[in-house]
Image 1 (cartoon, helix red, strand yellow):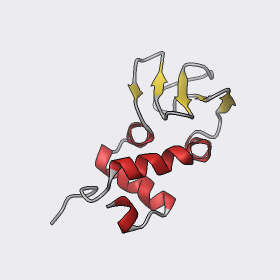
Image 2: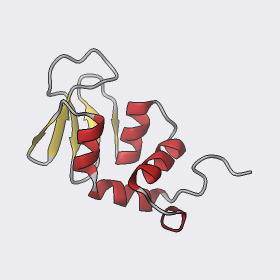
Image 3: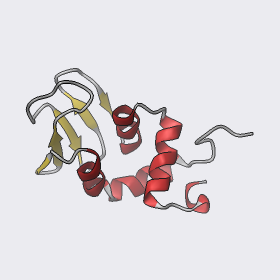
Length: 106
């Protein structure tokens, strides 16, 4: 029996998620706003009262919370961070959310 996410191709899921990133961050971080090539939002993982320190680059998927030092390099790591998931489970959930077929993500 394979573990969750073992058949998910991270590169395929990552590219598909990056193409949809403006819509994804709107769904995951609805109180944010676009500033140039970045999505600026409050970090829901902490008591963040003001926009500004939590940013996601909409072109690359890199993200960081400059107040805490938490950061990641892609949409999968953002999903894992925000939703408390492992990387394989986050990739699998994104694949499902985007409607990728088994052939596309395996």
